[in-house]
Length: 300
Image 1 (cartoon, rainbow, N blue to C red):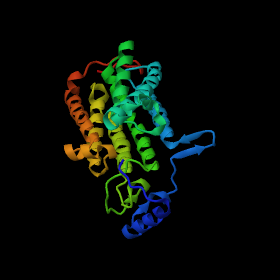
Image 2: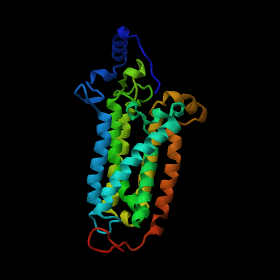
Image 3: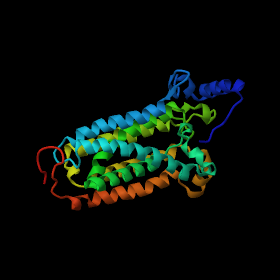
């Protein structure tokens, strides 16, 4: 992420003047810290808690979903799914970040394992989870597409907490702006910026969850294989693509954004949007008689 460093003695004065002149909020006056718990010998960061909360709450919600008639998997499969999903998020998210966002890490391959330094990609995590689902479905002879539908409904929890953690960390901020809610981030220079992390938390977390919840509970979308995961891919892709217009590109990718006209995140969203549209359009044709793994009745 592009940023401006100030001499320590002048930093607060410069930020105070910038805040006074623009009427923007100073991030460092919000009392937020990346560290949730510091015992000296052990430090727990909000970013780690965000991943944990997303996985655990997502698992709790998945159990609610598979308790409905016509579920594509049983409780024991959901338990296994947590293991595969966690591996997929960590491995896929980290590798995608290294390859797409910071390939210079490959010069020192051991740095790939330094997760504590930050650097995860949602797109890579999504691919990792999807591969985990494919493996489990093949192993257990389950419908991989319908499992994707159910798991997709749980992903917004992780997105919501992850974006909140980005905000608490004061990272991945937006472009310069004069909106009343603009924030001056310590690493973003003396410029009021969009709190793009909060935009994404709202759209990718809350709004996308509500859309998927409505489709699952109030329509028969879950009986059309591919419909729910298609809605997720389309919704996330559109929301992320749009927010990227007010989000600052990563420092090492500024030249790439200028040369291609789009941020890396937007390019990675294009196949998600196209894939989501395809799944939605073809979902009706995939509909078959659904025999329950959980629940008590067949659903036609």
